[in-house]
Image 1: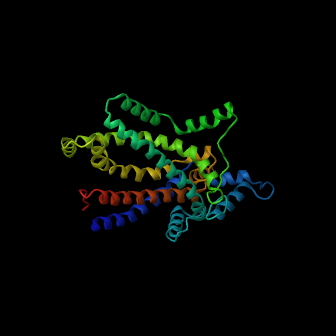
Image 2 (image 1 turned 120 degrees about the vertical axis):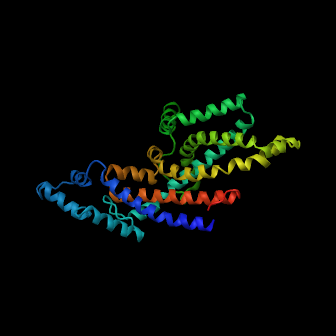
Image 3 (image 1 turned 60 degrees about the vertical axis):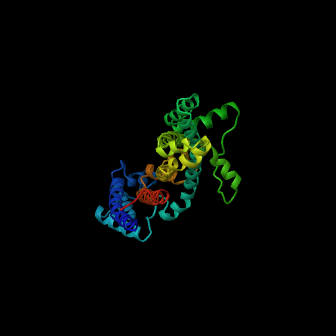
Amino acid sequence: MRAYLIRRVLLIFPTLVLLTMIVFLSVRFIPGDVVDLIISEINTEGEMTYEESREMIREQLGLDTPIPEQYWKWVTNVVQGDLGTSMRTGKPVTDEFLSKVPISLELGILSMLTGLIIAIPLGIYSAIRQDSPADYAGRTFAILMLSLPNFWIMTMVIVFPAIWWGWIPPLEYVPFTQDPSANLIQFIIPAFIMGTSFSGALMRFVRTMMLEVLRQDYIRTAWSKGLSERSVVFRHALRNTLIPMVTIVGMGLPNLIGGSVITEQIFNLPGVGRWLFDAVTQRDYPIISGMNLMMATLVLACNLAVDITYAWLDPRVKYR
């Protein structure tokens, strides 16, 4: 196990180097030029020509040097913990990321908890009542959650209550440290919608794993001993059903955080998803590069944590 962990940690470094190249170069292929966008927003008429303005801004932003030189400078700063400076606001990308990631992290964790609370009981009950009306109802719910797009449900939650009752969800962000109750009230609706959508796939996974476990020999042995259904399900089957969920949960959290772009736009949450969306529309290269690199690092870290946790929970798993 120790040798495996050492190999995995060492493998992270060349993976990150490759990711930095992909992230840095892919950002440069986004249609549009940040220099042209900045020129269109400022008035330089009468002061200098378009080409002079363009060259001056490119020099100020450090875009006048060759791409390999830009990449090396960026990577050198990243190694030192500096993700660069925003081309639009002039603020350090690292500071902005650290100020916004708690918002997306709170939304992602609440969504994950909601999904688990809904999916695990439904998946277990659907499996032990296979092919019953309750099973068909649970599977129908899962398919609906997989089929309905989040952004449509969120829009309906805002539009129809406003039309029918004159009520809209709170759309002004309140920090948790300022007012915990107001903060949680604002997060309840988007977290519930994201969580129920996530629960569709999770519920089907729990049901499948539970059905597979219930067919194992040791479960038949438990039934033959005359144990109650509750004892068989919760004492013998549940643990082995939930162990594979570590992978789903571990890899689902980065997806929920990174996939919250539309949610944060609709509910006016100043998290990393909305921040990244604004950066893409404004062609703010340092923010786009830094955000993508941080999310890729989070995925690698979660992947390693999942492997370690899986081996700890299931002694049968041996990494060599």
